[in-house]
Amino acid sequence: MISALLDPRLAGCRRVFLRNYVVDANIGVHAHERNGAQHVVFNIDVFIPLEFCTPRADRIQEVVDYDFVRVAIQRRIGQGHINLQETLIDDVAQALLAHPAVRAVRISSEKPDVYEDVDAVGVEVVRFKAGA
Image 1: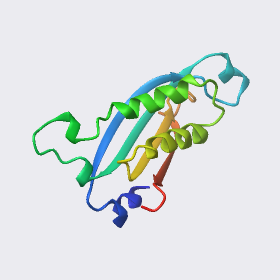
Image 2: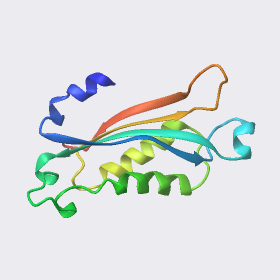
Image 3: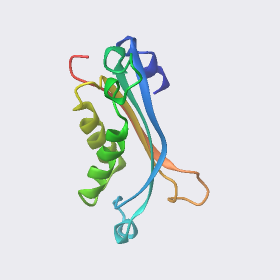
Image 4: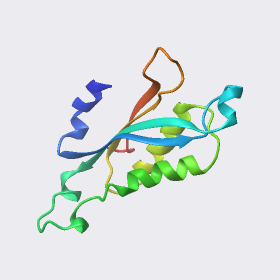
């Protein structure tokens, strides 16, 4: 996925990111995963054309406030049980791409508590807004 960051559609964009955002989510297909929430770690890059995020007067209104990234995750988690991490990150990607200033997103989710001998298991996706 690193090569996706070299995509020419990202030229002239600023990368806004959220690192290691840990939430509790009801996620998983196995019976033991349906008994309660488990930790999910998100890492998200949002790519915004410079025309929408270059401040001239150092004011929040001149940039994209990154709070909407956390809100998108919280809203999806709040909708109830999710079977697959792929579904979760696809849904969050769709919500983020709905923002008028967002050109592309890169999202990963990890479940750190699945195996004792592995730091985490997860998935990642890169998505571009249609027509970008």
